[in-house]
Image (cartoon, rainbow, N blue to C red):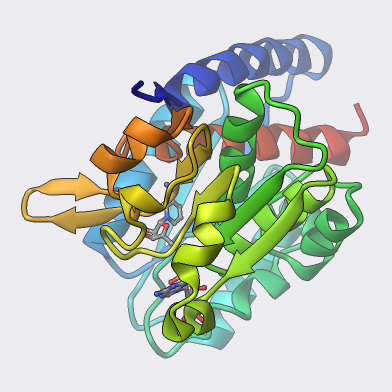
Length: 287
Ligand code: NAP
């Protein structure tokens, strides 16, 4: 039997309805609405889709969105100084650094310079630390989108066996923590697992599978456990098509739930970002 599709836009629409009501309430009570400042250094076509989605979603919700375009010759010191100015600006509630950054800038270090209260991508060590302890308001957006999709199935998480493929700081590691906080037994796979050749053995055990690597067809359909929940975060261009990291056709015959690519995790990520902006605004205003 074919798996049920986990479409991000359905859950995103529900979250957006709630956010709209909260923003309207803020406006009525204080006359102010949340604002997001996105910094882009240089032009990059890969960023264009996400930037458009940020602008469109913010507009729909009544969040002020401002794109700060810096010259591609901006160096690390200048970028940090710019972030610092936004850190101090009272009317900026959330700051996002659009990736990729030019090669001369250490992209991994940059989130450390955002005021944790304005770090709406949840990548500052203080916010990641809170995810570790399970007491957090802001978590990395894509990881949270994957987690929300898993929860939307209504399956009981306690004691389940999950396998995460990919251990990046923005997806694999935080998803591992979010599930661990729910008493899921989690195995996190990475390049070492792939090179040792044991990836299929791990994936075959997964009642919950999250794949975030960026390699088309890495996970074969026949590896999927019957009745599994499959969250495919990967986005890969193959010819003129976008595909995930999981072989969709084989996987959907075995899984109980599966995310399509595109249309799964992606549409939910930007809504979670806006939720983080709202949470940051609320905390900064003490309301
Ligand atoms: P990343 O930083 O490149 O991380 C990829 C991870 O996969 C790394 O941990 C890497 O391990 C691991 N890996 C590589 N080859 C492997 C193999 N053969 N077996 C097991 N693990 C392997 O990528 P990312 O930023 O997490 O993104 C992953 C994918 O998700 C990309 O396709 C990206 O476009 C997509 N994405 C989607 C969204 C969305 O909103 N839908 C958002 C973000 C990312 P090592 O580090 O040890 O090499």
